[in-house]
Image (cartoon, rainbow over all chains, first blue to last red; front, side, top):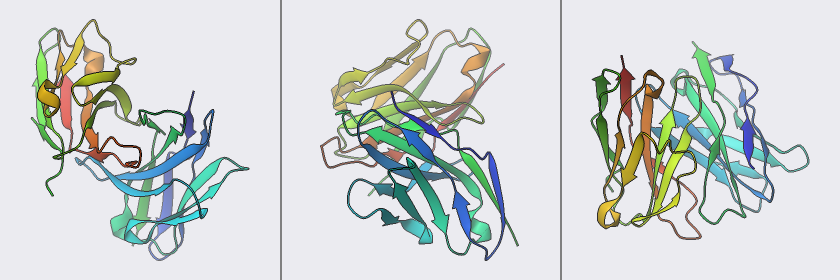
Length: 115
Length: 115
């Protein structure tokens, strides 16, 4: 069975400071990993994914994430946060052995960026 | 390219009533998902269709929830009768469904309140 943990319910950061949102995962096989963002009253919006290759992946809006297999982590980062980055962020994992592509989501981390 | 469409956006019903949600996926997407997102939690997969066949409904409360995907395009999710604990946002997502399509694209969701 696959699972995702986002240990922080909320992350507070000042605008211009680095932003990190943590995610750890557990799968039987190898993982495909994703980050999604959700703004109020909106659906989930895809940010980035790790499938294979370079452990550092770059995505939309200046976000990046680093896959660390030994620590089973996939933390989301942004060098300089914007007030507009305030939203709910979800990490998700898919086991590569699952041919139907079922995603397991974490509980989400609320990011609050203050001016 | 048009995104995933869902209707209605909001619905308020009393317990024991029935409700139905509609989803139109992105054109050409073979895989369609329905998720339930309870406040403060990540999305939970209810049912997954590949074309018009069900490939995973293990977390669908089949005594009250049903879903269909006629002709492999639009889908409806029905709850009958509704319970208070069904209050949630119901998200529809779609993906290409082939081995190289990893991202799921989400609609805006339907917010259901059961009183």
